[in-house]
Image 1 (cartoon, one colour):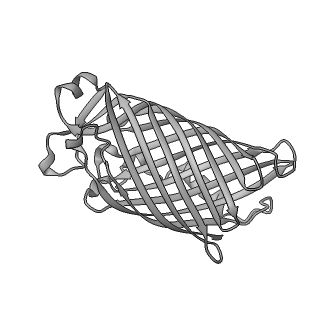
Image 2 (cartoon, rainbow, N blue to C red; image 1 turned 90 degrees about the vertical axis):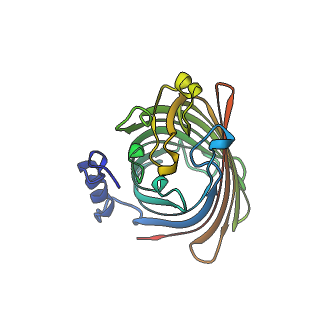
Length: 291
């Protein structure tokens, strides 16, 4: 559940929802919605660095985003978006979460034409409502991204993001920044393949059985409440460690506005000669439509 401190019912959230849902004539596009459902598998839900501490689980998730676009003149546009996402784990229920999200984006193109790049500056906040009390909090993000069509079938994205996570404890309160590249290939109109790489610098949280190495290397640690009464010795701890992330995926458009997606994600974090490896598979169905 969302703690009172991080409750999304605040004046910025209400203002965002009011702007999104009010039919003002200045808006050039209708209110658009995107919904999706998915199932997946995570082979290391606690980001454990030792094989004995790794726990895997299946999950189901669903999300809804509402977006509105305003053309500010020339080649500048403003987007406002509100969303709600939920992921529910099969066994480790306290890792399940519901996340309201609010974001604004300012897009700029230097001129018209298919091969002109689009530069986007954006910022947003996500509220984190976990079954695990120590994980509840919020994440604020800001970033820049570039979308560059390379050919009529190939598109490149580059991004830089800075983020700050906040919680009621030192373990889940930290900052990080990320640089990423993604390539999308559309050989036919119905099929898109994508591949991405990103590198994250900053703090990282792992869960494992408490030991002397953790106490020596960690910046902060505390008992983890997500793994049940049988795992009282498990602690969540925060390290400063770089992470590399690889993503491969396919999206296939069905009739109408429906699409099928399949995605694989691999994350490798290295700290103090230990590799924290994690793989996530996800299969989903999505639909976009006017609200």
